[in-house]
Length: 297
Image (cartoon, rainbow, N blue to C red; front, side):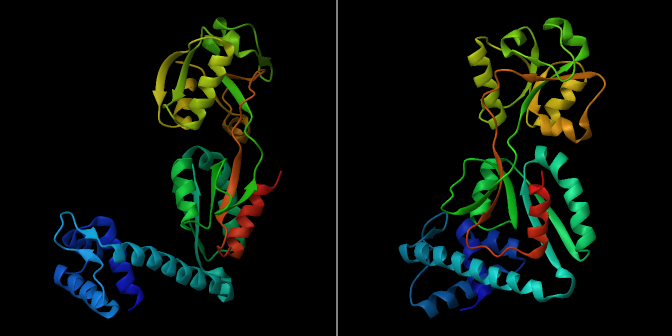
């Protein structure tokens, strides 16, 4: 039994089809079948029920593949831990982060990490917090930046500064709210006449927005619904609608002369971002340095 056989079996358990698995592995189907059969013969059990369609795992297969994934993860961590002995800390730095936070948190971090570790290749995996939490728990990243809460029995947590929500209003829509200027604060109940650009249902920022509206006692006029906050900000800059977003985003040089950004007096709901890593995970020097940069006030 070797790592390659384990990797083949894991992929096959995911796609449940020999032909598709062989194609992904860039080998022939007979070669894959032979490797799996050799593995089963060595173990003395059948891992896959070949009479079902799609391919199904046997009880022994379910147990074995679960343990095989853990074994390969341990092997990967052992190999990664040896990277500190390599000159220049060669290797990859894999960061999981939402596209919105990536836009304003990561560029300067990448610059400084590359200056200190020129041999490092940085790979960003941009996804929603739900996906990032799951994949961070599986050890797929050196670290991830997600919104709390997370399962702290699996993930090590380093909290970042909480998001402070602000309202961004195009100047051409200011007549719909009481007179305000940049840096002022406003009651959200005074925003009932504004059209809004918001992210989709079930996203964390949308949940916060809906709570704000409910607390303020009005049903919002949603002019545009988008996938991400960066797009919502772009829509707002076009003059179509107002939007809410974290002050940290605006603070990082994204301000626009056509926009007025004000605080929200009753914004009692906030997002709590954190850097997370799997608890038994080896943290490279490059990852520790990147984390320290993100933790700086």
